Every structure is written in structure tokens, then in C-alpha cells.
Image (cartoon, rainbow, N blue to C red; front, side):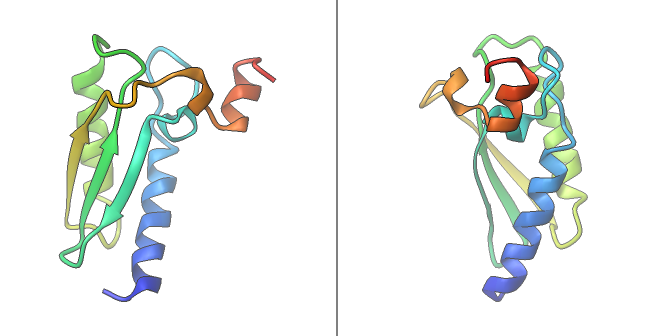
Length: 106
């Protein structure tokens, strides 16, 4: 896969991730800073490293399922592999400026 195609797919994935909202906070998971890394390999598998706002998040399973389903259904993606991590742990400094504004932190 050439770098241009890879960038296009990763941009589409970012758009998909911006359509997925944390059930407890009215901000999408991308702007919340829950997505640490997105890479698409030559086999068109999206590898996503993400975290949750809290390790004991009651909605973790459904949120991960939604990411898996929507990213795997993105044009140019054959499958989605999610790695859940709590290192580094999420905190408010990871919010995008849009999320900070939405939540009244700016």
C-alpha cells in the first residue's frame, strides 16, 4: 500500500472515530484523547491503540465493539485490531481544544 492510500484510509478512520461518543461525556472518543494510535498495515488491517476514561468503565465492552464494528466497516479496511491500554492513563490534558471548549475547560 502506498503512503497516500494509507493516509487516506487513516483519515477516514479518524472521521469514523469522531462519530463515536463516550456514553458518559458528550464528546467523541477521538477529541477526548482516548485514541492513542491508528495504523493501517499492508493487509488493510487497522490497528488501534486506545484507552478509556476509567479502567472500570461500565460501557467499555460496548464502546470497544462499536469502534471495532465501525472501523472494520470503513472503506479500505478489511479488519480492525484493538489494543486497550491504560498506560499512560487518560487525563483531561489529552482532550482536544474542541473537547475542552465543549466541556467548558477553555
